[in-house]
Length: 379
Image (cartoon, rainbow, N blue to C red; front, side, top):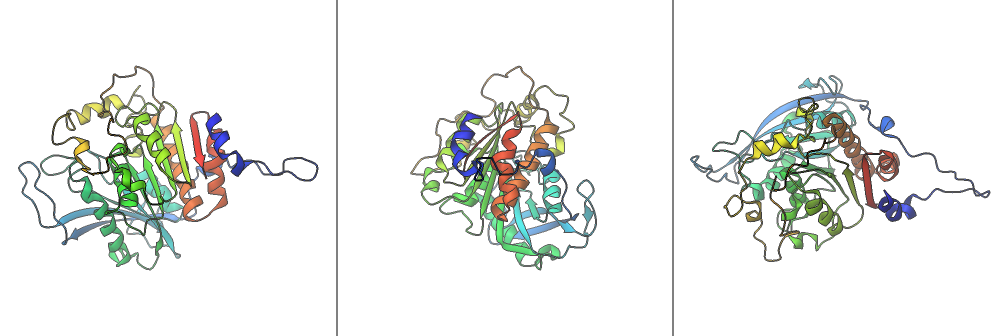
């Protein structure tokens, strides 16, 4: 916690009146921030086809001249609720920022459905596509090799929303767009926000969660970077915290925030499985078993084959997933991990996409009051 105080002290130092008494109000607390928003929540599933880009062959599955993107969209509604979104609900009146949400390897668009619904209740339109070849149900088996195509998938989904798919064009605010992603989706988030060729200039804010950031090209950081919140668990055995989160934070420009969840696992982030793994000592035991030997050393499926860049990548010595021994300890409980993520992401988006002082204050002061979170920031 000492690092947090040193780095953000100037920005968050308490104000004082003429008597020298502190006059700043207390920081917003987790309990105050982690509440559902004022809107109901609607949801719609869209089947989108990008006819301009193809899907490569995968195993025994032949290449396709187009890309199929089944996309779940949560939105502020006059009906439904966070825990029970209304299919096709009536859209609430207003203009709402967009969040493009990316799932991880062997995952799906629904893995962060709880976070998406929570954000929708606070006035965000959240769109989460199933990526054609990294989703768990990919024909021919999930692969990481198609990740360079995924930033284009996000841009296509944003184009589709603006063009009226889902009937949301009248409320979509394309001038305020965030990208949020977990694991391999965190890498996708960084690529669509930073990569010299693949970035979408419409994206204003990035939230990579336990991102595989080792493989981002170094030249992606030559241009100014958008405001970024990096969330990572310190006990992550799939995407190593020190090898990924720390170099990424150092490479980013301000505003930048690193929220390190103490002893949190990688597999504990998806809210879709949080209750299932609540009684598991280390959810990454399950996650590592699911990954198996997919990204194996020396194989064409390794993650370092993703970015063949002349300038090199952020961390060329990145350990492979599950390379280290199991820690043997008890990880942060997934329900706690999910709740911390929910509050952190919502507050950061409010603070840096909507310029809301309460959101910023929670990220920079209130979040660090939680004993199991260490915040480093340069606002």
